[in-house]
Length: 108
Length: 115
Image (tube, rainbow over all chains, first blue to last red; front, top):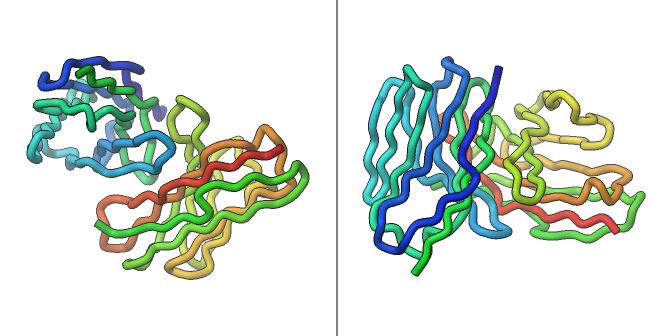
C-alpha cells in the first residue's frame, strides 16, 4: 500500500536543531523529497535524496534515509523563525505520495 | 529552479457555476502535470496526473466529469471545476515535471471558495 506518515507538530527554540521524521511504506520509491509550505502558498522543494543514498547535506539541511526501516528525516540546523512552516515529505514511485505534513513552530 | 505559474491565486464563485484554473510551466516543457487538492491542515491529495496530449489519469474517488483536466500543450494544463458546490472549496495546487527533470515544480496554488 501507499502510506507516508509524519508527526503533526514540532516546536523548537530559535538556534536549536529541528528534526522532522517521516515513514513510508512503498519500497519501490526512487526519490524522496522534502517540501516546505508557508501559509497560503504552494510548495517549495527543499531537497531530495535518491533511494540508494543514505545521507545528503545541503547547507543547513541534512537528510537521512534508512531504507531498511523506510524512515526519512530532515534536520534543520540553527533553526530560524523564518523556518516556521509546514514540511511535507513525499515519495516518488510512478506518482508522488505526500505525508500528512509537520507544522514546525520556531520560538524566539 | 523551474517556474510554474498558477492562475488565479484565489477565486470566489457562486454555487452551480464552473471555474477554470490554469497551470503554466514558464521555462520548460511539462510532459507531466499533477493536480492536487489540499484541505485545511491536511496533506495534499493527488487528484489526477496528465501527460501532454493524452487523457488524464484520475485517482480513485475523484470524479472525472466534475474535475475536467486538459493538458493540450507542453506548457499549459487546466483544471475546470464544473457545477461547483461549497464542498469543493479548497486549495488546489498543480505541479509540472519535464522529461529531463528529476523533481516536479509546484504552482503557488489557487484558493477556491464556492458560496
